[in-house]
Length: 393
Image 1 (cartoon, rainbow, N blue to C red):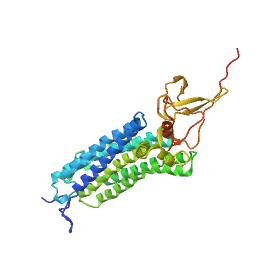
Image 2: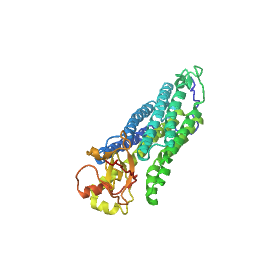
Image 3: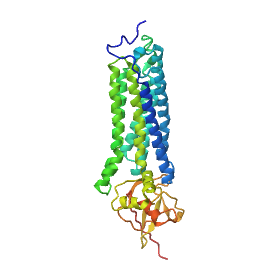
Image 4: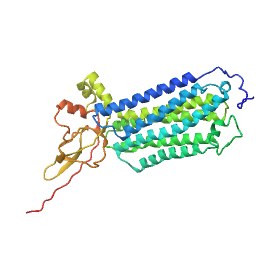
């Protein structure tokens, strides 16, 4: 019985096997993603002493489908993924196609979770705007449309993986190659939009240009995800030009795993600055770090959670509202106001200029401890004023 893939091209080395390389790559990136999430949670709980928030939970949940994709990649390697198709048994090719089917469905579920986590992170810092709502719609729409389209791509559905054994046993209602490329291109476009969302907001802040560049650079680290997505598309283009599907899909599987893992790392990097600052203080001492990165010459940025609103007397019946300088609890309920009582706030903070009337929540503490909480950050605050009028008796 002749192979449905024809004869191998001349000059090809049928002994080549990229399976070990493929497995090592995806495992290494998976471990890197786990480390990034662990450091993010550590920064939240141990350094900021704050609760794990919705964006943290969502990035952790995204690790579940990524773990499933890791398992699919390793299983695929055991059935010939990463080898030339002419040395793989036809039954094993069918199993690889079944694994690919599951892989695609898992992949299109993992990517939106990462995007939504990033959007929620933006929301905590800048608040929600119409561009972010569009990004939410694109992320959810990507998952929904790709899942539905893929589930109805072939009739019967099993023809997706049996087509090489029984070419006349069914049909695919649309060409799968343009489907792969179009959903990958839509994914890159959405990544680009989400990547650029915070940049105009940062440049509207009242701070030095160097600080704006630094903050923008932190957010633009997500550009590595776009690079991984483009490389993934590059390898997918070979699917239309070659019958060596198990060999080509090995690279596609790799970059389909690299992309979400890098996405998790890039999503976590902006949240790790408090942990980095705390580590530097322990290694070099707080005084040296303060002298180097103090309020007058700070070039480091902290994305800091600000859940509380503080009230300070301004005299003559006027008051000013300030966000708490740390995430600690304020037990004086009579002196606490909340703009959005059910939600935590996250804002960029700085102490490049002194602010009068600000009270640090959390009770007693040494001056050095309070200073350590405040240097190396960029503070954006809003002032609220009101007057109280009392009717004369």
